[in-house]
Image (cartoon, rainbow, N blue to C red; front, side, top):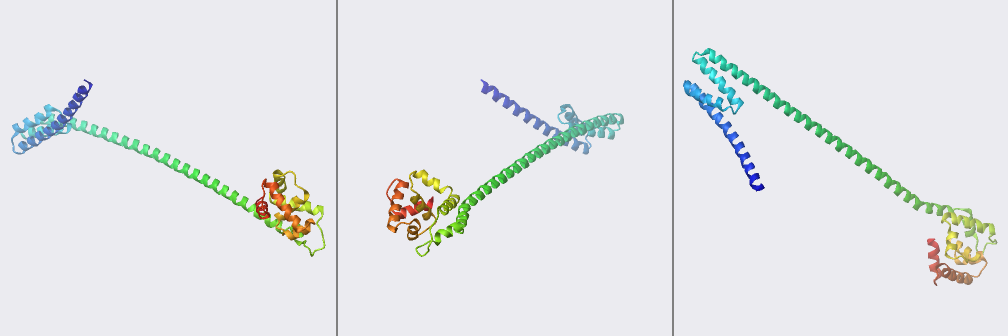
Amino acid sequence: MKKYISLSIIIAFIHIVYCESMSSKISEEYLYRGYTHQKLNHPDSARYFYQRIIDADENIYTTADAYLHLSEIEEACGNYKEALRLLHINQNWQDSIHKTTQAEMMQQINALHVKHNTEKESMKKSIYLYRSELTAIGILLLVVVYILYKRKRKRKQPETKEILLRKSDIYARFHSINHESNSSITEKEWAELQKAIDDTYENFTGTLYALCKKLSPMELHICYLMKISISVTNMAYIVGRSKSAVSTTRNKLYEKLQGQKGTPEMLDQFIAKL
């Protein structure tokens, strides 16, 4: 039932629009016919068509023209009083047309103004969003650059510290001792080497003790010497042991620190990574 009602409303609306369109065309047709008869000096026929337009009263423009042409006909026929009356009516219609035109123009101006303001607000929002996005991207880039800088600096710090260690006096002191030298390392120098290594490699000694709490002083010293790349031969001379004894200690050290058997080469690699 609702579908039929909706369909009826749509058909009625289409009929109204069609009738209005046809009425406008008929008014224009009557105006054309009336004007033709007027020029052919057929006043009665012209009056007929102009009056049809006035009676229909469907289009203010054709109605105003009809009154104007009727006024011209009456003036041509010598009916000046009637011609003046019709001219006044035409003037009233012209005023109505003028007001309607002004109202339409004001509506168009207001519509343009509203559209302009809407576009302006939309543009402001777009600019704000664009600036916000640029700001966010800028902040993000700064954060990324800062993080990369910190990482790069952090990577360089160990390298810088290693360079400083290799240029230090204590490093040179241990590398100067060999079987040809006639000197030995003091406890103070061992302590100084430990501090230099711990400063360079982030608490190297603490890491060793965390892996194995039972490290002898000699085992600890061997780890220090391995960390600063002392050869096994010079290592034996510095700790006052034979080369074979140092090798045996190194084998035991790997098992102590890693919990499994390994070779001296495996210990070298492990110590180098600490």
